[in-house]
Length: 81
Image 1 (tube, rainbow, N blue to C red):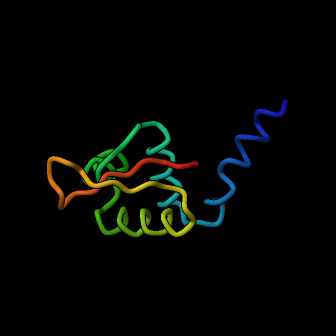
Image 2: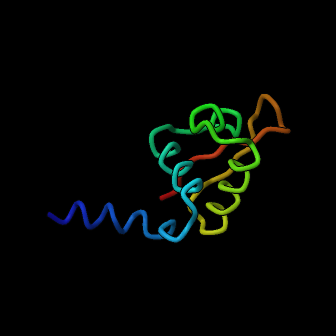
Image 3: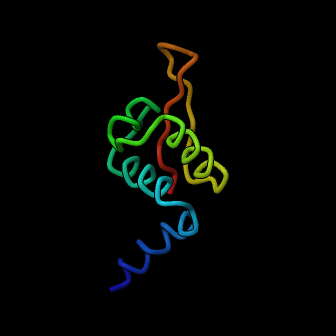
């Protein structure tokens, strides 16, 4: 019975974020690591909305950002929660 409460606590930092940020967090929870283009394709959100969602998730320390080694201009994200 404690497990649902622990799961609810896990998502507490993003509770007040907009639905787009919650969707991005949920997709990152299902995948190990994704680029912004992959997030756009998976969520069907525009790139600007994904960037805003990633910035909001980063502001509450809910994601980790890493540089893609094959192309230093690109970033990949993973869920920290």
